[in-house]
Length: 438
Image (tube, rainbow, N blue to C red; front, top):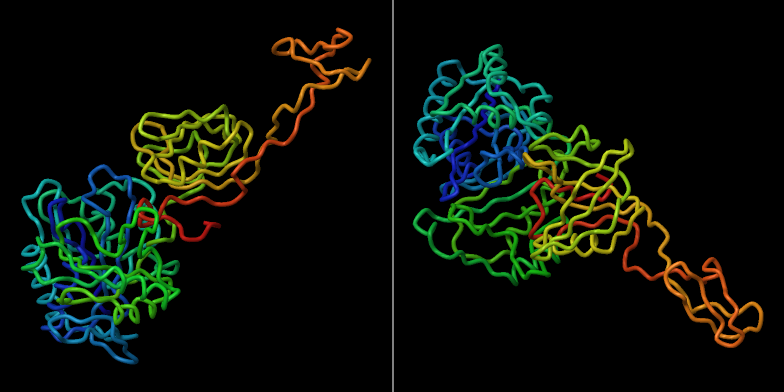
């Protein structure tokens, strides 16, 4: 059987990159005569886990002796990286030597010693159960349970210090990969890692205009280029696409400093896989999900431009939700909501039960009414004036009293329309759903 390899937890907030570490393993595989089978995987997991470094991504790839049709998916050391549609298993000896060499290389490129950096490598001859991926992208997974699963599959397992990286490495292999997008990542040479990145904004815009399959390249509201990271790491830029050919073609349009290597990954970004329909009572710590219900009370303006609202779900339970100012669009929507509006909110929570909003789906508006002019006197037709809240009116001509029920109302204007509201692109999470129906 071909060799599945998963890796995780190699970087730190100060540098490093697990996607770049996978390119190192691809280079190691080449020295053993092994090819990439299918597409390398970049799998984002639960974005709410408290011990993540940055984007909480794990990587996986399948290696073997390639056969059948092939296509170019990258370049390392000035040589093309080919993806084969099928392949044979190497000998047991070659497999063992490759995995040992891969682990040595992974240790060499990992930020070992940095707080929370505990690299892990997992290899199995066949995919792991899909359920492991769904748990890892939506909940907190018990490390001991993953150890037992890997032991039962006869897996090759290597870790440094804490074994928590086993969860991500195994989950990347377990990802079904059917609901997917793609990202082409270009890397810079190591000596440039601490220098400012040089990527032409104009060329990225041209690429997005030409390739409609690209997404999240730029945030026009904040004028932020989204293809380049803002952390010290080997990534120069990343082009995301809903089709694999879009970033491959767009790479030829982007102008930048010299690219050291590049590779195309199949990813779960933009799928919304971390979201699960929930009720208020079933929404646990460090989880994400959808909650449907009605707005309960007027939204509250918080310091810093954040807006808090209360949702009452269909069970009658209440949930506080906050739209944070950096999301730009969501506070404006939350501010305009009114009691009785039917909404579907999605977001995540940590230990405290407040929902941090990642999006709002406005299903139905409650009636908005505004008082019209005071009613005419039904006796003489004269003008009336208000006697106070809920006290009715008095005619200025004949002094007759008019009950408050006679007051006329009209529909109040509102900027809101039923539909889906996302954060501004620079505030979106990697897993945030692209489709409004997710």
